[in-house]
Length: 192
Image 1 (cartoon, one colour):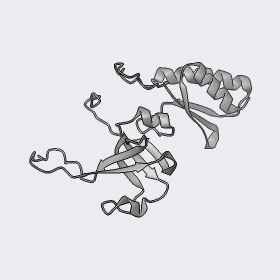
Image 2 (cartoon, helix red, strand yellow):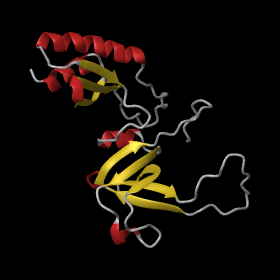
Image 3 (cartoon, one colour):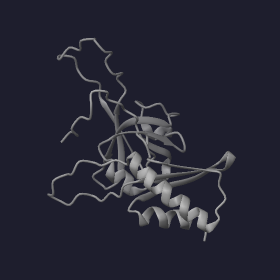
Image 4 (cartoon, helix red, strand yellow):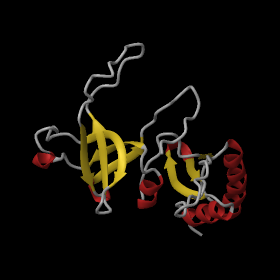
């Protein structure tokens, strides 16, 4: 049996999603797992998001070690981990799951003249909020205004910088990942 099949059967058999299999130098086999996600039903209360724990990784590691040994797979070290706070968004379901989140996008090609005169035509990288368009596509919304520095008072009368929006398709993306925003004061409730 192929390595991909062994790993996928083992991980899904334990009730997790296989995100990625990566082989690195020195015989390292890196497996990334996540908890299964389904879109909440219309009108149903949103459950708090659950995350992969160390115990989950340990359980998958033990089972994979056994399965890979039985099959005689060639590897020196096995590493099982969660996708992390800057997880890659690869599939349409990832975009649906993290709609409304802060993301970092890198385009395959610069936006060209279609970006209008407000956006640099050579720009490929963007950070902003991931949103669904009315047509069912995707867009990123951002402001080029720098965030206020800690301790600096911002006048309530001050006009906010205009928001920019850019639509994109998944084929135009080189990479999309969640923006690694860390709040040391604990998890805040998601905005409604």
